[in-house]
Amino acid sequence: MDTSSAAASVDPVGRVDRLLRGAFEARATDIHLEPFVQGARVRMRVDGLFRLAEETDSETMERMIGRIRVLARLPSYECMRPQEGRIDAETSGLPADIRVSIIPAVGGEKAVLRFMNQQGILLRLDDLGLQPEVLHDLLQVRRWRSGLILVCGPSGSGKTTTLYALAEHLMRERGEDWQFVSVEDPVERRIPGMTQVEIKPQFDLGFPSALKYLLRQDPEVILVGEIRDAETAAMAVQAAFTGHLVLSSMHVGSPREAVLRFQRMGIPEYQIEAAVRMVVSQRLLRRKCPHCASGCPRCSETGYAGLVPVGEVLHFGDPSADGRPAHAAEGLKAAVEHLILAGVTTHEEADRVLE
Image (tube, rainbow, N blue to C red; front, side, top):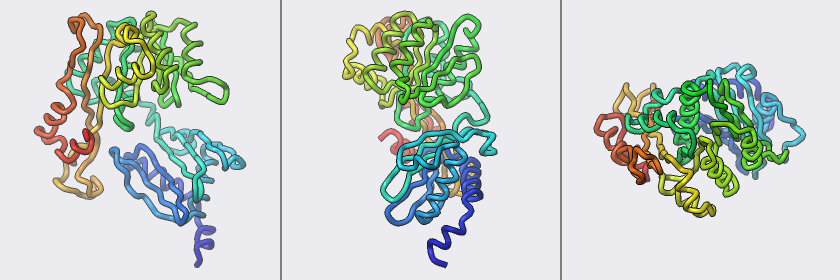
């Protein structure tokens, strides 16, 4: 049977269903369908690293992406432009929503599917597994009425999970008295009791414009999914030093890099000092598999199973910190070394994450 005949005989419905279910059962965070000039492949990310799921041909990949479009309710006639959508849990049959992003590429289309809102669970801060010092500092945020709390780290470091857990903590503590709103791209988890705004650039609703309108409604707590540009940074800082508690994230490696990023965005130093209360830097490391020493079927022969977070905190303008920036945590490298000594992770994993 030639390649075209084989592709025509593919059942895209069953194939995509098996892919989604298999990735979910493997605890994958996302699936990548990648086209090439000749052939294509499907990879999934598990515990922060890619695993090859299958290699296939371009026609089969095209049919699979066509099926994904149907599930995400995306129009098939717009296949030559980027598209974003969502496969909800009811449609997929899995206890998770799936964010879909499709973009034209040489050799076909590239699609990325990201699992979101798994079982509707919002983790609590004390369920994250952060070091006691970092957890203690985050729990103290309930005492604050204003300021910017920033969570930073690379992609896949758990920033959004920590932000949501912090928001959940504040809502349990102050939900009856405070108004909570968010601006996100996209809304990854629904939070009962919070007004959540998903940005829509095609309707001129980006982070800065959404923040401008929400500030007129005078909320006490604002969650900004990510600070990516100078305009959003300026709006978040302004909100923080005019009486609002702002929670956000930034794609930088350390608390000090976050401050430098604000400065490069043109935020005056006095505004940074007045607005920023706490910067948390976070990483996720793979745990050693509890069933083996070097690899077994339960960990797909990797020697690792699951993730553990580590973080460090830099305080600004907190009276409890004597008015000076200071590390409240023991630092990322020291925290990771502690995990290594405790047998939780390995030197190789530490080198990979902290390089």
